[in-house]
Image (tube, rainbow, N blue to C red; front, top):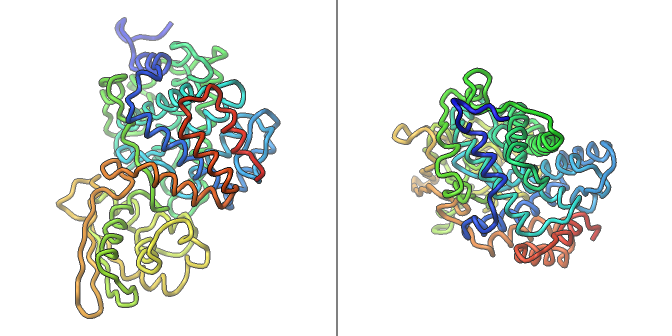
Length: 460
């Protein structure tokens, strides 16, 4: 039986009941739209990720971990791997280039830890489009609820929220498709929550940050699979004073966020999408600069200085002095991204080629970018005020609090489809791209999503 406090339900029981019993018809239409967009967006990110050096390394590793019925995405991936191996590889590829979907409030990437889990399990049994979306919905919502509970304190201590709160999301998605009972979901959450991962020091250059989603997807699936076999986990993982999940990771915990209006209010409906291929804290400054460039052509050679004023959180995450090292470090650094936007008019995948990372002209321009904390902003605000001073003394200024892609400035389906096509067309044929888009658009009406999973391992 569950270890209920004072004879009542634990938080874990309430979450487990939500995960087990939510139906497709319970989901708000706007949330379902976001889930379709996230599905297409994540597939594009994952296919592109198969081209990266770290994606290739993890793929090779995954193919050595035993055989099974699942597939690693992309023409160089392969079929016949175990489900956990497919999840490790595909999740890593989705999170491999700082372009996967994002929940800005929790600083987490839900698609990378749920979609590979769901699509791998759909290769083991028939899964309808509606069942797929429902499994993703409970996973996304669980991640956001846990992320809101642990708050920004966890991030400031150096934990990566995708690798911490994400374990519960992956367990929820996996458990839903494995048909766990509410009691088994309690244990799946109680197992998953003992295995969070992800240290933010990786942002300065290590490949390992790309792997956080892969590890998290595998952990969540493993937790759900063990719970299905009656393996037990911590039954009050959110309530325990000593050794419970949130208090172990965070100095300031918001327990009510886990269950407030659960099943009636979907906090995960506010998903954002990255139209710049870099850390989300850079996006408002880059959008402000993009808008400035649109209003008046700026020759980067004439730029004397760029000044960015933003919150302490954004400066902490990406405002450090740029030193050439890896693609990862460049994607996390606002000086580099600002320089590339001025020089090339965009900050997407092509702006992170190895030859640019230590280019003397890039370094010189990046060195003229000054990033300052605005004392009038709250710690976690995302507002960025950008001033570009030219050699003749002219100053052009702009600001942005919600870049295109943010839920307060959401992209339409055509923008998501365009991003998908840019990424996926580097890997698969235009015909395959069109078919994937068609299947995802009509995913609700599919009784079996196997035509989609088959395309992701196609050789053309």
